[in-house]
Image (cartoon, rainbow, N blue to C red; front, side, top):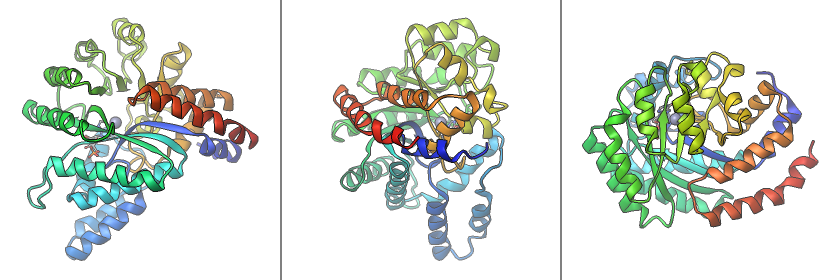
Length: 356
Ligand code: IMP
Ligand code: ZN
């Protein structure tokens, strides 16, 4: 995608909402290098890590399997609560510097017996980072605990219980539960009881669904829970291998879609930007938000995603503004936060358009 300086500058200045960002996938190359250096100091024989550093390259396409392999490199680098705190601060700062005004981060709590990190200390480190960033950064940050598709039902239940426990002492920061991980590794239907439990606790659901083809029955059954938002939804439309029933549930219930263009291109679930399902959902006025998914792994920023969208589908700056502004309706935070954000957008509007 060619660079268009004026458009890029507009997209950077545009106030933005990021609703689909996995913490460990969002770590920048700079932060990753910092982590690798630290590890190499402790374990000078960590040749594997030195090699890993060179595999984090910009610009390539990878298969979905190769994308997931990236997390096998990153996760051992973030295996203490202290590191999780540090990377959370860095990731929030990256988004704030990209003029993201509201961010919903998500992450899979991990228990690492070797370092003493538990699922609870993992999440508490993230919540502390979010709290500490409040003072110095102009961005509102919320958090979702993620269930990995490879989790056992018991493990997923533990995550929902932890989300519920921490929701009550997080001052509104914990807003929901995510369901993600290698889509080929599990079946979302087996987690329906824990999804229902999360809903009964007042936690919102952001579920990766129809990220790969031939999942129509599974997707339909889970969609009937009416999740708060769906991640990707690449294979919902009949022409993409989905069916009308899936589209009807999405449309009738106005279930918003979190669309991550570069992630889908690099993971090769979508062949080219101009084939992306964004266009069809956008054209029927369905609620959508533009997201990065894993800005570190996929070497992107939310501003770049807006710029790519505009260039691919010939969208005016006014239309980009509308997409960003309407994303406020889709956040999991309360009405007061939405009203506050609308005020921020209205205040910034003149300044953003003055540039163009
Ligand atoms: P973490 O939850 O902060 O450790 O972020 C990395 C995790 O997010 C991965 O291990 C996956 O479970 C999940 N993830 C990241 N990108 C994707 C995606 O494109 N599809 C499904 N799951 C993903
Ligand atoms: Zn994702």
